[in-house]
Length: 299
Length: 311
Image 1 (tube, rainbow over the protein chains, first blue to last red):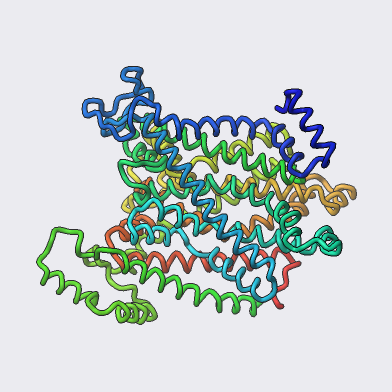
Image 2 (cartoon, chains in turn purple, orange):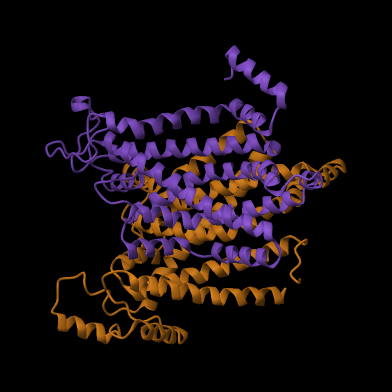
């Protein structure tokens, strides 16, 4: 993995200067995790295909070939994964769907990251009554049937892709807030933070040098594991007919359509379903790998 | 203990009221109404129908009317399904939804605990690896993919189960329930197995387990009587979120398998602006989730003597 002599030398030089940091250790452990490394390569390829690949592919996702409805996978005209009920190329549709699903996953996760970290860190730092109130609010939200509100929201404001990001992000921030709060409180009381304080390190410096790096680990892990959850949530909405709108598509929407045409045209289900499973597999393996790398005590 | 329960109800009741209020106004803000989507009807007719349901009044009065009726146990008539009121629709659908949900939870808890414990006790073995792979598959395959595939294989190709959905006229027989229950339970089996494995690994390394082994207890006795008891605690705190997940999942499952439960009504009702049905389903499920969360918390306290309710 880190094999070239140059890289080795650089690494050694760094090591000589500042020792092995938490992150160097974590990276080394992650690189030893074969499932995670393979997943990163596969996911990288998928991301590449979904961004660049859809521009290069011979068919457009919304071109309708009226005479080529439900053609099975064939080399003819390069419909290698067949066509759908309207005669659109499945490869092109899967690539666009994958792109939309990944984008929803990343943006919605980012929304929940911002809300969750702000909420959790504020509660943890201030502590006392404010903390109690803020976390009680989270507890209450936790026990709500959120999917119902998301559905009502989608009905109320129309099926707008930005709204999907916001709605899912607004639902998924709760766990993030709990994790960040727990970490912040634990860190506030740590000896090394006290020591830094006693040594006269300024508060912004303590936050930058000690708090942020230590909170970052669990947050990074949770973010990686959240992207698949969000992708699932979006596809859940799409399946119910509340997701992105035609001719744009997402993996959930493709799967939903494929499930209906499963008997006459199984390839319309298999292609998107396999793509989705592979994507989720990769994200989950990377997330698990990161968790084991950053916090190896449970292995 | 009683104080704790009362305090929790003190929070739960306002929570439910807030849910009802938010759902009520969000639904009404949605463009369109229950009588717009059908064939166009003369404006006067529409006005008359709206008035007969009290929908012509200012929104705030409608809200108070609704809440007033609700406190008398009246969920109102359905705006779309003629001759039926919301209570009847829910009473018809609830047994189906509840049976599927309950069986799925039992299956998920039983199988998840078993698989997770086995994986933990044989950590890093082939068994562990297979269980964790299965769990990863369970988490990564959404129910709306799993459902159609299972229906295709077992219903159509193998002919082991009927494919026509679960019609109440034929009763809820095991062969009609098995696929929906498995599909709904699968992600939960996977999550519970992962939870259980992690917590079991931690517990079997602890000192009191070493003591139990050292004093010569048999392996099953150590696991069942000592390890399982504390290893199961994280699972208990997951029961609340799990029940919420099963309820959300049932929205999809009932659609995939054409089951006449209440989840199936919800999405259709929301799209058709059948306000009263949407509200009825939200109220039933919100109450259910809140009560189940409370029960899970109480169970946690019973199982974990470290938790004290007074404070």
